[in-house]
Length: 294
Image 1: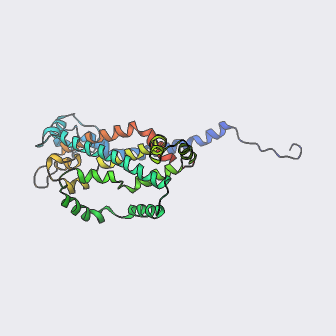
Image 2 (image 1 turned 45 degrees about the vertical axis):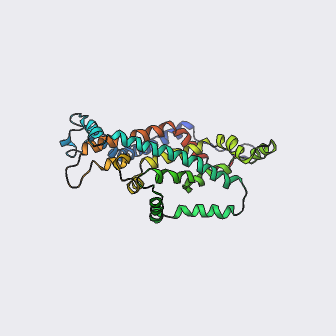
Image 3 (image 1 turned 180 degrees about the horizontal axis):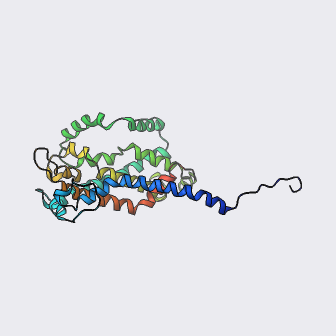
């Protein structure tokens, strides 16, 4: 007690650290165990890709008795068309999808976030409402439309809609980010004689790199892993993506090449992993800052 004021005595930092250390060790151990459980199927697939064919399903161990890379050679050139063709088709579709989503969705988001036009709130609500519509509801009308246009068995049904801002999720994501950019920048640019297009190109896009990278990463991953869309619209094996190519290794009427399937499945993960690795920082920044006022 000093001058009628009670001073609180806190525990030394070293004591707090000692008390929290056992709990931290337990938490980290549980997190590592959960991570191993989630990674086990992936690690087993990689291990199975280098096992001899007769040992793939005989053991759950992650360590193969012998290493055999013949599954990679067989999977790459074992089909009528090399697997590289499927890689190229998927890469073309994925890159075009990324470009379409980033360009079209950013333009639509800029319009909703910055421009004033009649019915803006109404059309924005309609756009958000499309997020609740299952893809299978619009599948048949879209297929009939693309069939009448002669686009079936081409990549156009998979790419062209992306250039028309068809992914409402990315528009909403970018709108929230654009609203966090101070409007004073727009006003200053207008006073200097900038048009709406120049403000979008010179100010909004450079400041929105994190959210654009987020949209690009998700677009690439979702398109690269898409199976249903290519299955509906692609019939010629020359136009198959990697997901349809992987399906050809499994045959319900004859023997399936499981070694080739696991080997090519392992290779298909490499582009996604590298794409995420290079843009991880921008992805985290885009998700962390979306919707925050600055």
